[in-house]
Amino acid sequence: MKAKDKPFESNPYASPKAEEEFDTGDGSAYSGKVYNSLTIAIATIFGSVLAAGLLIHSNYSHFKQKTRALVAAVLTGVFTLLFMFSMLVIDFPLVMSYLAINFLIAATLLPLNQLFQGRQLELHEEGGRAFHSYIRASLVGASCAIAMVLMLLIASTMHLMVF
Image (tube, rainbow, N blue to C red; front, side, top):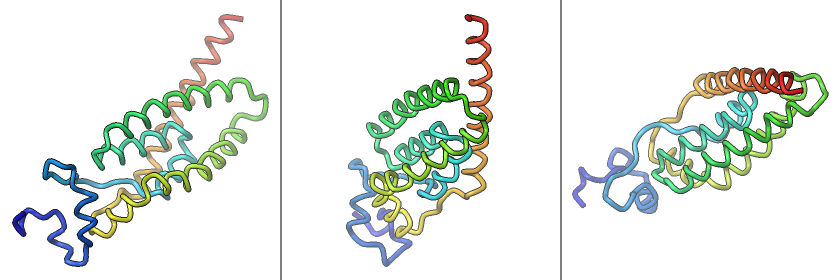
């Protein structure tokens, strides 16, 4: 491998193991920004499991882990539907229960994300690569919150039409 072909040439302090982790096998390293664990937790507080799943899926896609990205996408869909159903069933004030549940989800996802993506995120940082901003994560979370509110309105309207 020539010196100019190395993905971490710009960082002389990057470990040789970091090169192996980012190498996808075909000689091409991934590129782009990813979301760190804290930005995923922030997006989760606003946009619940939908936002968390989208950001985790985005990270796996950037790390070129297609199988894990697919699993994240499927689990996001399933957990979003479960979350939506639970929001229709719970009789508490909607906003308070939404925020409380999202804080619990974020508190659960923070260590889980660190467990599953922590090493890649550390190598990403050691490689001198950039992360997405907290503002971007907040906007993704807010967008997912709006989408979930619209889905809840449609679901509750359909529920009222049936009964």
